[in-house]
Length: 317
Length: 179
Image (cartoon, rainbow over all chains, first blue to last red; front, side, top):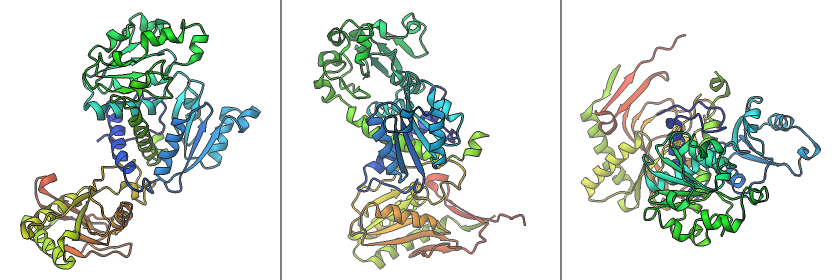
């Protein structure tokens, strides 16, 4: 099996298939831990994980916290409001303070793309990117891959549709960077104003195609991932109305029925029910949205454990 | 390099330990076997087969990975790989026989006991090993031993099982330590 040598988890864009497979396989082992009567192991006892969330998050933050706790790590939470960030402290100064306080692993979410890389280049702690602007959300890509692989088996040749606001979505990018190396074929669907113009014009990454029409995109597909539609997009004039969006791209029961029988539905949350996904679909038999939550904890446990066992000096060499 | 157990020795040791486990622990319906990955699980499966053949009783069989319970995560110098643990029966009030290939410092067994009690409260935990090579660092001893093999701490004891390695054999490899 491939040896793990990474010091940080910033984006999966440059990961090999073996690295992705390793994390998924470790995530499966962690799922067993989460199914035990006592969901806690002592692996990271005495180690400190800092959760530094400059941007709002509920499920990713809690997921990382549960993952760290299931490994017995000490966790500290820093959010933008109520910290010195409000007083104008720079990102680098905040993170240096965290390091001085003994953080061995910093899990960070930030509104600026590249923020995690910026920090990783400047401190000794390991950094896990929990979402940076439109850039990447690597743990979401990995948990979606784990969820799809559990539901579908090998992803080779499987057709996965990603519907919604692809342009502003770090989830879409990380899903592509995780699922394509595993052999999945991605079809993007969404309003042309919410798809990167190069992609819309046919200059797509390998393994990815764009189909504006959601019904055509979903015909015979093996799975669909709905993206959250942020209301700000409509205010920015990128969408005529939420209702119109829901009519054309919302996942209704009739629309998901175009996929192969039983093909699963994923959503990274939080959902706008009735807009990008109907309640009947979100809570219906095809929905794996709750599985995604559990798998998210497992994948994050896997990454924390891999990083905690990777010595800084060796990885830097 | 010396062969300390050949295929026939391994077969006899497994047969004897299987008899001992039932003899010492009484009612087989209370006994369960849990092998420590990645050789103890093979040995545990053989013990289950032997007990089935001798007694007509199927002992519950589990496999335990102790990676998350190790005390040397920061010392081993590489990210350890977690393998799945499978304990598909309640351990409460059972006599659980932990099974491993080699007993050395005792640290693996300490980790395995910590892991096992996270699954419940066994009536008792016993230990069966194919080879006891000495040099304990913790107050741990085995209840069932295939063979005691005197070793130097620097030596390497390599256990091979047909299921994983194509042959049944235990080798003692002398490793010269530079002084």
